[in-house]
Image (tube, rainbow, N blue to C red; front, side):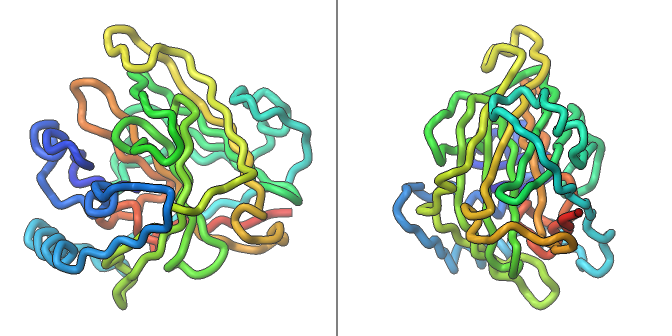
Length: 290
């Protein structure tokens, strides 16, 4: 869950100002600063949200979604192949997957500093993701499920087969950590998010993921190369049967990338061009192919 205010973000005040941030309010801060547990939690702070909205409006007007470029679209191929979820992405089926690249700065569509590539395919049982993240300074310490991965480095998927106001958020970090939740989002008449709340009790019970990395996490004195994540998400974990060819879901894919001494990169496949990653009206279109 994330939000790029001119390169600053999340719960370290130094990130927001000293590290190149604008000081613009981070919409996700309100949610993520709150104590997270695996119990069912609905978070509503009307007064804080009102203050946040006022601060954001004072800082810079929110663009009219009608003036923004259309969200991106991808056709995800239906493929068949036996794979081992080990993080390697070496099976031939991965070479036939849809490839999403490059990623962009979420709010202004600026170029990525370090390359991100995501491969996608599906079969009758599951959706498959293969992340490849170039990274000269891998930063990750968290391993427990539902940790605050966004405070370090992480890749994320937001996806919904149905209404935009309720979607899944899944995350994977360089050490194999996993986050999963269901988000309920309230949008205004123009489709801009006003507030959102999370059900952290959700667990994708049969999802499998594995990581491979080349580098030394948390040692900025050496030069790392990359980390990658291989993921299998059963459609049953998303409460859905396998999609049919031609079905269109909505979703987006994101990355937090950190390098010592440089601003945080908050990257997306289909930039929302609005404050925060949680802008479901700006999610890309995911069409399931033959």
